[in-house]
Length: 310
Image 1 (cartoon, rainbow, N blue to C red):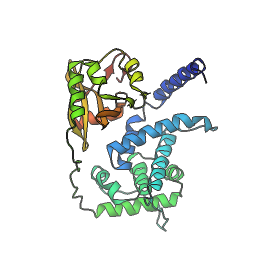
Image 2 (tube, one colour):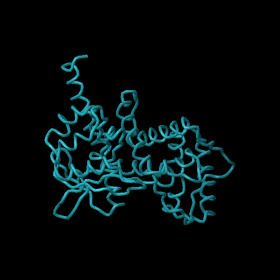
Image 3 (cartoon, rainbow, N blue to C red):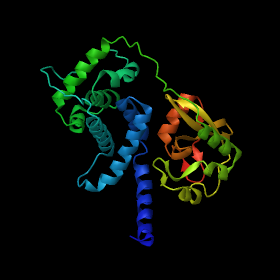
Image 4 (cartoon, one colour):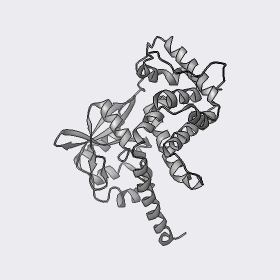
């Protein structure tokens, strides 16, 4: 198919994406947190969030009936994660019914503490049930449809999980940090970035690098990078390494009237002394806002000309 033929398709897909982003704007933060606690990791949760967005956007044409968009988003996220766990040969869990009435709980279970241990104590389907009912307040009938079981099994699962959590002592281990070490190529990348040395930076990147700005754009050669995202040069901000949720990343910080703000978060993979994979979270509001809270640095909410998160 020729480039001339594809261009209208590209434009239409971008317009659809902008309309879609507007429709889901009220659900993004909640869905991101759901993915984070369902997977037990902000990094895995971000991957699940992105995969969910792509699946929902790409699959809406299959819905021939009126659809509750919020419920549909959580349904896709839940089943995407469960499918992933099945491929990894994890026990996704069986949800059994019991002969107990479906009553509301009045105890003072500490939900904030419970969120920290769900992934470690329960199966993926059980975790989904707890989050969907307790945190996001979906009705049992809705949750049953999402995780493919019965309302009775939802009530029973919820009760058993609450009992287990009430008896748990919540002696939570601190987050494990990977065995991290500074890479010389990444240090050279940071130096070139901070000096505004575009050619020096590009020299560190493989000719066939995968250069991805999540849910924004994708470039697959150095030539695409040079003529695309780097066409106007480097942004003039400062890059520094931080440990974020156990992972060594580059945080790009811009100056603002309110002091330093997070412009972007990046990480790279290096092989044979070249950057072969670059990932940027420039377009990921929920991720950057959560990271900003974790790092104690404000997020940049306006990034000219394409982003205004106010």
